[in-house]
Amino acid sequence: MNNPFQEQLLKAGLVSKQQVQKAQHDKKKQKKQLNNKKTTPVDAAKLEAQQAAEAKARRDRELNQQKQEQARKKAISAEIDQLIINNRIERDDSCELAYNFEHQKKVKRIYINEDMKQRIINGKLGIARIEGRYELVPLAIAEKIQQRNDKRIVLFSDEEQIADENDPYADYKIPDDLVW
Image (cartoon, rainbow, N blue to C red; front, side, top):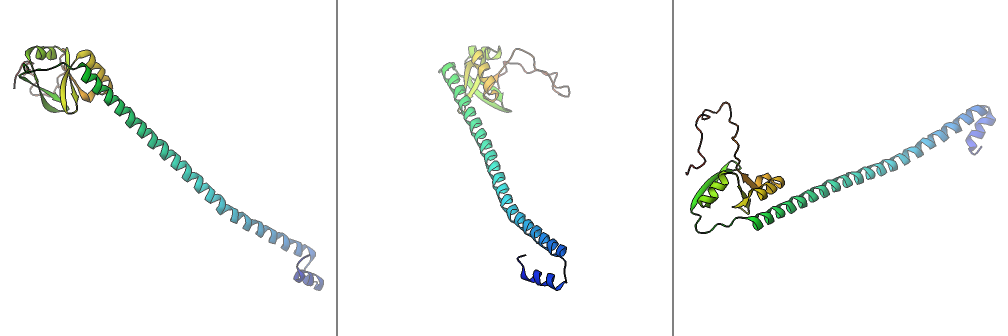
């Protein structure tokens, strides 16, 4: 026994050997619990650091995906611009006829000639937007552009558009050759 006070109590007969052993056992148990408590905060700190690292890695992956998506959209936009520039139908001074059309719920205007107007109405040409202006492109190119980004193209088809049942003007069809 290392504790002289316990030895004195044992010699005096105030405590038994079992009581001394039990006290030592309890003391060791308390010491062990104290050590576990000391290591637990360290483990908690490690756990918090690991969670923070995982959160940062997840955030980095999300940012990387966003950057890749932006790069992909930019590449598609550049590809569409190239398609329009390489395949646009040239309009010259003879294009004096103003052709109005709807694009993204707004009425837009492009100057064309009578032949171009008929080809647009028949669905042989599409109207593509590039850098805020509109250009005429052949139907095949217009369909390629529409596959990549349908907001940059206006196509007119020969098919009748489905009329809304509640439309009060359903009986009044607007002719394609109407000039505003």
